[in-house]
Length: 101
Image 1 (cartoon, one colour):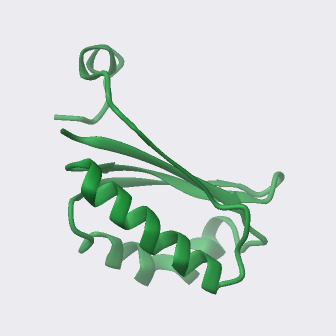
Image 2 (cartoon, rainbow, N blue to C red):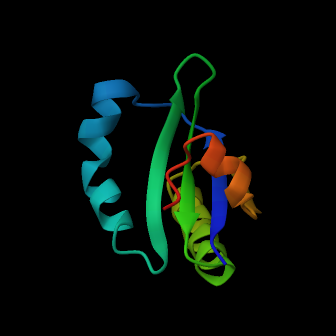
């Protein structure tokens, strides 16, 4: 069963175009992670937060990615990493045009 992973953390930057330039290689590598379907990158420069919303094929893949990604972020000096895995309510999400097909 597909799972949604929500991750956010305090982030000093860069943001916007500078974030895109700095993290394009990382973004491309995420496509090779087991079970990944898609990721939406999130950022809030004013609040100094970043993260993402991910859709995985199953809970095993989402949990493994969260563990690996948390370790990677910690190695970069990032703290206060919050990660949560959710079930999807596909019928309601479909009503609101969620990209789940």
